[in-house]
Image (tube, rainbow, N blue to C red; front, side, top):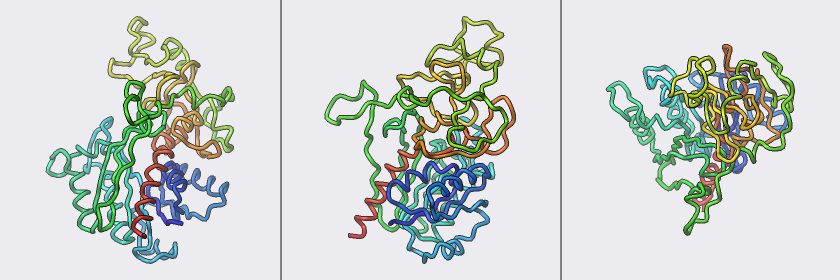
Length: 369
């Protein structure tokens, strides 16, 4: 089986897909305590031998890690990870390398130089493509990353991929960089799905997957349990919607958002501007979801409540036997570290990771022939 190491593992979304593509993940490195608890819970359930290391990647010696997983330099097939995206997100302050977290993406280069994997896979927001560095030029950070990868003999390719194009019911765009050692021989997978208006012609695309289809069958949420850490799979399907939020979303039609309801009084729309298109957003059953975000929890298409963490997992493509650990909290209070909704929203959809992982495995197999 092909060998992989995961950096910035989060709740394990990308790891699920990489495993499904035929890789054994030797180690997962993550700092957040709730994400590590999620990774550990699923490793126990699956009787996995993966090492889960709770640490800042900057404190890890890659050469020592190689010894710990019983590999020599150059024997690793895949190094992958999704470094923190906040410094580059178009929805944030876009501080780039002025944010200390912006430098974490270059940890992928440091590890690659020491481990010498055949392939590196990096996930990021597409804002990285235009992020400014010390010279305040658009695209400077991305150029620096490509330059550093090439300097250690890796050939990078990149593509912004829309999750809905690959069967995930979510209009989520993310940048993926695949850097291959020595030769530039990777090809990104072709899309498999399309909206109805693009399905004609020779390609035979499948229709976009709809939100209503993937969240069906879960039944009613259990009563809300604010502030508790819930420890079993069924309890991920929990409603924590505050009563005031129920009152506000009750006036929003399916597929719309509260600030667009200009016929309602200011009392209901208080604090919202016309630009607030993702706050108090009710999803539509017959469309893919908007990109799941950390700042807001989206609302059920027909019920006056937040989507539950388990519904978020369905929309993201997590398997139903995967569990989350950590608090389930509303957006009305402070949230320390990553609660369950944020764990999902921060992660790579597992089906998309599987498709990329399968393409990488095929490349490795071709190289061995």
